[in-house]
Image 1 (spheres, rainbow, N blue to C red):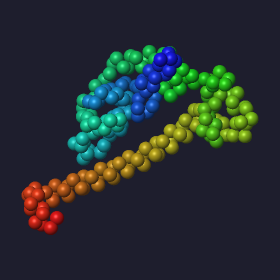
Image 2: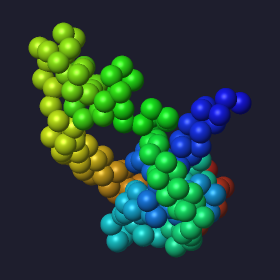
Image 3: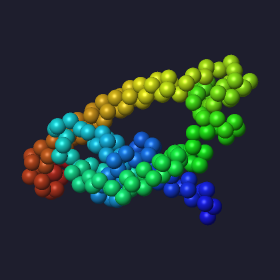
Length: 189
């Protein structure tokens, strides 16, 4: 295997499947997958009445217990060493350098949705576009992601409430019929 491809594959393994950046305080869950501790905890945050529900791995959907999160110190050490090499998930060996000009990618073209360098910014391709510093656009996108996540959490909470209601209805129905399938049949079900 080409060493560059192998290094790129290793760097990708150092990324959290949730936030897609280098793992921070990696933890392993029951199925063996690893995530940033804050990412997986945030994903499993639920209101108090739902705390007894089963949880699943976001990758393989295997049932897991949140209390079984195990810090993965070896993985944390490997991630730190890869980080010191100046490599980044999603960019492999290129890092954050423009492949055309060799300059740091510090700008973002809003029209094209591309990260660029200063030389690209001044090129005819981007001169009429809105090209802004990465820091400025990062906050804008972070806010958009926050709003989208907030909306999804509300929808998830509504889905949990519906599921709880359905589970209660099913439990009441079973209690009314005594859990006997023949009784269910005789009741016209």
